[in-house]
Length: 222
Ligand code: SF4
Image (cartoon, rainbow, N blue to C red; front, side, top):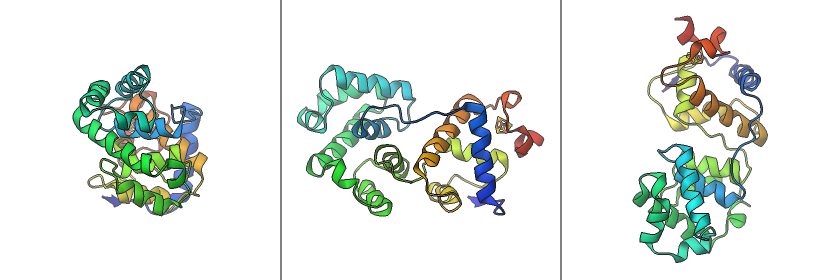
């Protein structure tokens, strides 16, 4: 993946943020009550729609199995059953189990005392936690500035004409990390807005007629 327009990226990124905000308003993510619920959601949402995550989380809550200790105590079969709606439930159960095993021994509040690079390294060392999941946990559960990127981010920036080539998580994240102030609220809203725009407007087949970014979009002008 290559960044095509490197000039004034700081201003361009802030302008894009304000355009997305005027289009979608303030979103205030993440839809969860506790840091643990955020982390659980970040693992369960891998390769599935959020509505399926909600069903799995509701299952855990209904079974009164919603603390790290309670999840750690149930069998693999039980956990798989409860997580069934989230898709890839066997693999997700392994990932959730690895995560709760880690935080039963080392509580999240302890982990979250670290700075972003150390916290990120620790999260990435846990089975099933990849870069997007780690950054989501850091940003939305620990409330520390680590920008989250995903395929929505890539699709939008590639259509705007800012990047080309294949999706590359680290390079795309660096584009935001290196050119924006490290502000938790800004990172929180920015990622949420990109996801909202990608899910509702700049979809696989884009709804360009409903999009406020036409004037700055290469895809639209071409
Ligand atoms: S104009 Fe179309 S392609 Fe460009 S950002 Fe909007 S929806 Fe996406």
